[in-house]
Image 1 (cartoon, rainbow, N blue to C red):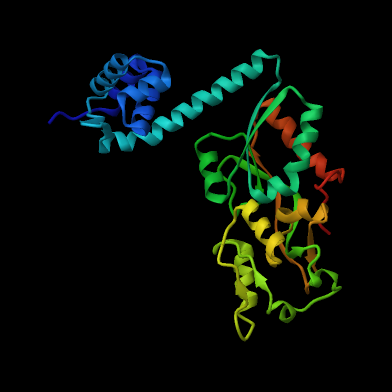
Image 2: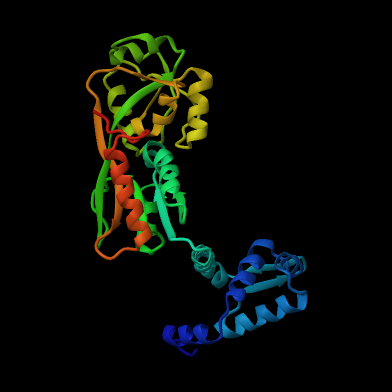
Length: 321
């Protein structure tokens, strides 16, 4: 069996490959039908069949198995699909960047934010930034921890709004912007909301909405519960999805232990109330993770704005004292 060279295959793909090939590959894998793929991307059935045959010849591997109802991906195709999706996402991002420039824009910033950073900082800061720099497009995605670092490693992001990481990625630096701490919250009309000071024992009989295990808030909650004779009741739905979490807390009179910046918008709107309980538990600050040294002008403007926005004490970006 002949040995294949990755370098030779790469050169062949660069010379003869097309983005359309990846589009056909992804649609065929998703739809499982040549005819439906043709309809979805505006090609004829014969063109899709020819494109598939060309790809298999180009890669020298079988990509799909034919059966009575259509096609199914081979194991080789399944291995290739994540790469094809990533490539098409890059093409889409490139189109956004070019169009932004053609429309006399100042540039595009690809940004990832954690849930706490989005709610505590970006929710007010980004609209204010857009008013000052309407020509800069900010493409914001929400992601946590490992997904943030993976995006950095792949070069998919210009800025990350997040909690200070234990170790910054190589070539990146973290600028703290917003302090944070753990808080216990309930809906504003909960009887406990009127108490000036509570003890942990006062809350043992309440029912809690829990975040998943592995998060700092859940770890602290479990530590506190270990001091009680019996574990407190918890709601059967355990989630970090904010719409679900806040729906549970606001509709069923539950308590939740969460980072302050996660709950900040609802606290400031008066829908949630922070319960005063002992000494606050500090968390790592929220800030901006950015490349060290050379950086695009648009990303630099946004990073500097976020740091000044908090320093001015505007909106929800005030530091927690």
